[in-house]
Image 1 (cartoon, rainbow, N blue to C red):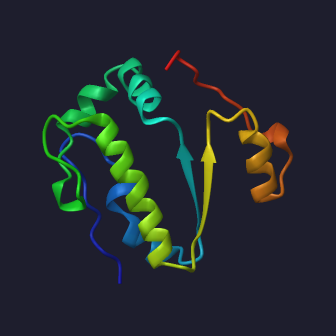
Image 2 (image 1 turned 90 degrees about the horizontal axis):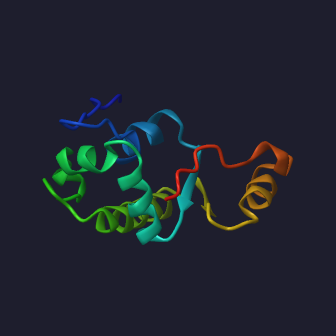
Length: 128
């Protein structure tokens, strides 16, 4: 049962549109949910090239995301809830939540995956 992949009109977001396919093909996958303050996430999106404009053009209402110009923080909060709900309703998946603004994020990831904390770092800081 391979469901048809869904693409939005502006941005392909498998973390939104392909959760059922990911579950079908990888029923025991571990999901990593990066967390941060919604206001800081929005600032980061607005500072990353044209990403805010692309989000505003992306049409995903069938997944519970508003069409057209949407509040980016609302998108972030809705998406975080949707991933948590998905993991809760599909208990074969592990969900690892990491606050990327926590200075111990690397240590937390290392602990969750049994790797050295030196494997994790920040590589795209843009002031957001």
